[in-house]
Amino acid sequence: MKKVAIIGAGPAGIEAASLLAAQGVDAVLYEKEQQPLHNLTDKAFLFPNFADAQEVAEKILAKLNTPGLTLKADTEVTQLQPQAASNGWLVNGEAFDAVLLTSGYTTFDAHRKEELGYGIYPGIHTSLEMEKMLREGKVVNTIGEMPRRIAFLQCVGSRDEKVGNHYCSKLCCVTAVKQAIEVKKLMPQCEVYVFYMDLRMWGQHFEELYRQAQTDYGIKFIRGRISEAGGTFDRKVQIKAEDTLMGRPLKLTVDLFVLMVGMEASRGTRNLGALAGIAGEYGFAQSVDPHIADNLTAQNGLFVAGSCKRPMTLTDSLTDARSAAFEVLKQLLEN
Image: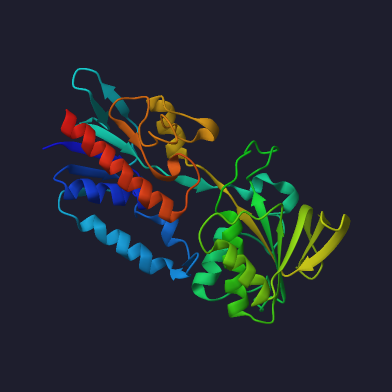
């Protein structure tokens, strides 16, 4: 029986591992955290249809029960070494016929943008923290009351020369629109503002969601850059910005200020990419070709899938995992 290691039990890793196991492959899925799928289970609802993230997660997690799939949770991969004699790979001392890297992403650390006040002033949160509040159905200001005004800021840690991330994280725009709508559903009287450089509505129904946010929910979108955020005496947040459409500076005091943090390569992706010789730009893993060989790498028997390569939606990650599973099976049959 052929044996494949899949590193990272996110959506891509679980999907690929279950498909390989279903085809008679001994699929061993490594996950450094105690629980798999942590980058999905920390969400409330998923765009564009506002599906319950927990229900989607449960359907994906059920695939771990596929016969032939072994999950090794709380196990960090520290050895990823090719075996020239057998064309296989050594993973933590165990031999495999092939390896699929699905080590995913992490979110940008908002502390690195000191001018935005995260961790300094109360009332300033990341988009992940807002997801938690929405999941619990309890969005409150710093004194436990319902906020009257909330501002979201796009592109925190993405498209930013100062932090070295020139790329777009792809998900932040529509996530802000989704969260803004969720806030208005929960608190119709709350004023909601979204500050953006330009809105990139990538997928089907995303542009419609943006229009609906304005027409049905009265969410205000301001094209502008926020230069700084600070606290006020009454524990609110004052933001200073420029409205680049009007060409005027503005100040706005809000109860909550939400930073839409972008996606970066995870520590595991950076470490394993460097260890295996497939490190690409910004620490993401490098495939052979983004068009026709996106699951292959320069190392024979080593494959990549999901957001370890670049920012991806959940749908993109699952689709890419299926493609990667096919490529792995193809090589196993050839050998």
